[in-house]
Amino acid sequence: MSESNGHQSSTTNDPPPPPPFDPSEPSVPISYPIKTLKDLESRVYFDSFHYPFNRSSVPLQNAAFPDRPRMLVCHDMQGGYVDDKWVQGGTNGDAYAIWHWYLMDVFVYFSHNLVTLPPPCWTNTAHKHGVKVLGTFITEWDEGTVITNELLSTKESAHLYAELLKELAVGLGFDGWLINMEVKIDVGKIPNLKEFISHLTDIMHSSLPGSLVIWYDSVTIDGELKWQDQLNEKNKPFFDICDGIFINYTWKEDYPKISAVVAGDRKYDVYMGIDVFRRNTFGGGQWNTDVALDVIKKDDVSAAIFAPGWIYETKQPPDFQTAQNRWWSLVEKSWGVLQNYPKVLPFYSNFDQGRGSHISVEGEQVLKSPWNNISSQGFQPFLTFDDNANPDGIQVIVE
Image (cartoon, rainbow, N blue to C red):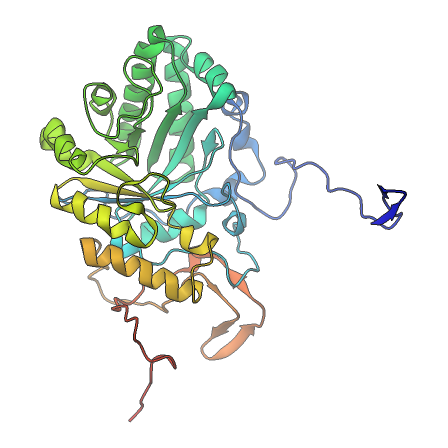
C-alpha cells in the first residue's frame, strides 16, 4: 500500500480478491455452517461438494448414559470453523485441540450461525472416546426474530424444520442438537415452539437411538427472553419434552439444589452452565471453574462448561500444553474420570493429540512440516498433573 496526500491507493501488484465461496465447486474440503432458513429448507447442503467429506467415519459404540451426573462441554471459539474446518487436516501445529475426553460425556460444537454443524474431526475423536456430539441451532437478535416467526408460523413449518435438522444430524453422523432461541417469541407461537422441540426429539430418537435434544435456558413459556438460571415453572415445559436443559451461567449457589428438586428423577438431565470466560458466572470461571463444579457435584445434577478454549484464546502461561493440562486437572479433581477406555484386545494408541511439528511412521519421518487434524487423536494416558514437575520433562530409562 502507498499513501499520497492522506489517501491510500492500491498498487497494480495487489492480488485480486478471492472469489466468493461456492460450496458446489470442487475445492479443498472444508466444514461450514448453514446461515439462512432458506438454505436449510432447500437442502442445498446435501448438494455441496463438501458434504460427503463432512460425514463422520467413527460411530458411537455405546449410546447409553450411566446413572450419574454428566459433564457437557460446549466449544465456542472465534466464531467457529477455525483450524478445525480443514476436513483433511491443516498446517497449524499449534492449533487448538481437546484431549481430555475421559472427563466428559457430551461435546457441543457452538457458533452464532443459524445451524452449526460439527466438523467431522470432533465427531470422530469424540466418538472414539465414547462422547456424544451435538450441533447447535440458534436464533438471536433482530434477524433471529424474523427467522423464528417463519419457523413457528404453523405446526407444519415447525415439523418441517425439525425434520431438516434431524436429516442433517443423521446424514453427518453426529448425535443431536442444542436448541438456543435467544429471542422474544409471541406467546401465540409457543405451542408451535413446543411442537418443534417435541417433534425434533421424537424423530431424533426414532432415527438415532441415544441421540439428544437439549434446550437452552433462554425464552420462557410466556415468550419472554428471560434467563431463569434454574429449572422452574417458566422453562420446565420445554425440559419436559426434550432430553435436557442447559441452564444459563448466572445462577446462585442454591439453584442447583432447587433445580434437582424440580427435575425429580430427571435431575441428571439438568446441566448447570459455567462460562469459563467469567461473564457473571457463578464461582468466577477461568482458573476457578472448579468452584462451580464442586457445588454442582454436591447437589447431584449435571454440568455444562462453556468455552474451555479460553485457555488457548487468552494465551494462558506458560504455554498452551501446560496450561491446558493444568486447567483440566481442576475438572478431574472435582469430578473424577468419567469415561473408560475400551476393554478389548488388541488395544492400540500412539497418544496422538491431533497436532504436531512433524509425522513419523515406525521411526521414519514422513512429514517434516507442522500439521493438525483432530480426527487422528489417539487415546491419552491418565497422567496426574504436577505443577512442580521436572522442567526437563519425563526421564526415560532403558535397561
